[in-house]
Amino acid sequence: METVNPEPGRNSALDSKHELAKEETKGKILVQDDGALNDSTEAELTKINLMRTLVESRGPSSKEVDDLMIRRFLRARDLDVDKASAMFLKYMKWRKSFVPSGSVSPSEIADDLAQEKIYVQGLDKKGRPIIVAFAAKHFQNKNGLDAFKRYVVFALEKLISRMPPGEEKFVSIADIKGWGYANSDIRGYLGALTILQDYYPERLGKLFIVHAPYMFMKVWKIIYPFIDDNTKKKIVFVENKKLEATLLEEIDESQLPEIYGGKLPLVPIQDS
Image: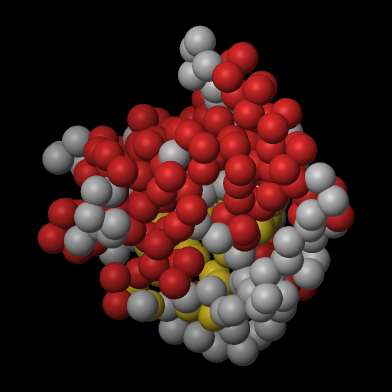
């Protein structure tokens, strides 16, 4: 996705605040008391404080987010404070307009929930929750693209709520078995990708794409250029004959869904 820059006409102001923030944070590295940032580098800790000063000067509501969120946006922009701040402020603006109540109600996305196309169950060997999406169960939303986007937000928030303390990422299995052109929804796929990359950065740990038919690869070629480089590194196409073995490298049998040779039944995302 294209890099988000500061608002037009605000660059010089942002630069001035950047310099001021540097002075204010010089010599100060603040670590949360719960130790959540213990795996941060010294450079990250310094830039977290710097970025927080910047975004709070532009949006007071930024004070409500924790340092882990600030760090995720920083990591998504390779620790570039200006780019990460612009990305974060865009997220805050989107959140306020798209999810004004703070969450998505199941009643808003009843049609997508009825398709039962996303399930969750289990944790991988790193403690990351597992989500399974069945592409053949997805059809374009008759209520429009925004309704599907709300469904994506609902699923991501549900998944995040299942994360063990200290965990920030999830693992996804995209099962393309049975997918056909009736399921092809490029606008929906790109909308979901935008939400994941722009508004939930550094949440995806790994994406396994399984049972991908030849027809799907034509659509994949359209989507691929819109995937940022950090996300591309996390995507693995799995050969059918190596499916169970590949998944077992990262997921214990006791935590693997039954349909892939494991022991856990899948649970629809709305019931998790």
